[in-house]
Length: 232
Image (cartoon, rainbow, N blue to C red; front, side):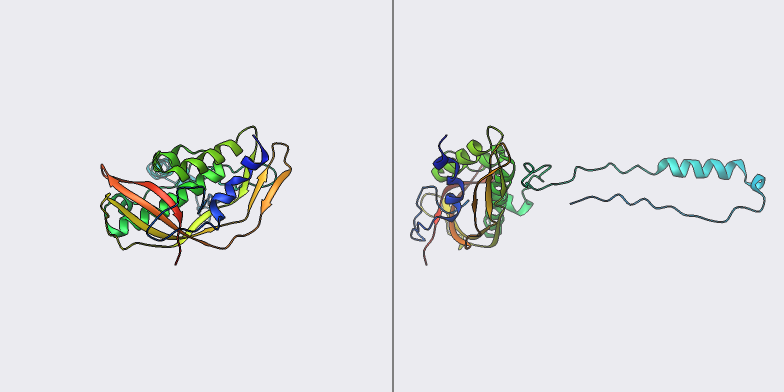
C-alpha cells in the first residue's frame, strides 16, 4: 500500500468538495468509563455476650450475605494512544426511534450511522458499518477500504472520533423513495500510527463539515444510499 492510500482516511472526512443540497457527490468526501466497584459494609459494637447470639440469627445473616450477588468487573474502555490501539471500545447501540420511518427516526439513525463510522475508525472493525452502508453507497465503500487497510499490518489510528451536534431533515420522500438528512459532523484530530509506534502523520483539528446523507427505509430498517457535502 502506498502512503497516499494510508493517508486518505482524513481526506474523506474533511474534503472541501461541495455539491448542491439536492444532489450528492459519490466520492470520498464529507467524512469521515472506568468502572469502580464500591464495596460497602457496616460495623457495630461487639455484643455483651458473644455466646448469646442465637443459631437462627446467625443462619439468617449468612443467608442474607449469600443472597447478595458479587459485582462482575467490566472491561474498561481505553482510547488509542501512542502505545497501542483502542481497547474495549463500546459498540454503538441503535436507538429504538431509529428503527422507525419517521422524521425523528431518520435523524436518530443518521447520528447512529456516524457513531458506527467513528467506532470503525477506532477499532478497524468495519462489519457493523458495512451492514448499514451497503454497496450502493460508493463513498461509504471507499472509506471502509481506507479504514480496513490502515488497521492492517499492526497499524492503528489515534483520535478521529466523529460526533454529530446537529441533524435535520424535511422528511420528504423523493421519487426514488429516499430521504435526505443534513448533518453537522465534527471530527477530533487524527494521527496515523505505524506498527513500530511511530507517527506516520497527524491531521490537525478540522472545521466541522456540513454533510448530506441520503437514506432509504426498507424491511423495517434504514440504510445509506449516498453521501456527500452540501452547499448553502
